[in-house]
Length: 326
Image (cartoon, rainbow, N blue to C red):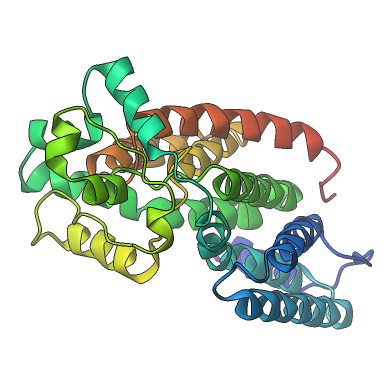
């Protein structure tokens, strides 16, 4: 066992015989998204609140990408390759607020989605879910599932790097590509989700089935409802702290939490690691339910999150066939 671990650690720093000369696929994906959103920022320069920060932030990412490429060219080994990919994946959270900066000037669409909820399900599941399952146990379980999102992503990416290195880059491409596809949707489909929309409209109107359009309201307001549940819970506090730190009135449809975690589960099945699949399955199910339970998403967001996640996975799996290390 110790010998195998030692050999694996040694191989991580072993110089590659045929190092990659240009950018990695995940870096090309990031640069393509960077360029596209840069053009949008330049086109909407006078309307954006922080265009200079967006532009210079992208310049820093280019510099970072080039610097890591240079380091890899000097020391071409699996570890420096992992650092290049890991750096781009860590920036995914940085890209998220930009979807709000761009779409905040567009007319909000939540009244349409809330109306769909009402006509499809005869109620607002995001409003009633926590009422049907009250108490500390359910609250903490769902919040734990929601909080496991980034840990699930990190665990699976590390698993591919450590145990299925031949498909490590391909897995990273599928995850990165899925994220940026969701970000593109969020830019052009301005839906903020129940926690913001219910707060803006008022719960009395929501319970009465009245869903007024909010137009550009969320361009000026970012107030949201506190998550329902056990407020003294450890995981409840963790989720609320995360909301306060980085949540924006954006990115509700479809649910990228459901979509990306669905992609992750498909990747595990692709690797045929059924033990890991069954370990993560409870967290996945809790996470999917939590998106509605904590009022981050409408039920329709979660449903289309699963559908889109499955679609993105199989499309990107097909397109990434050539991204494989021998």
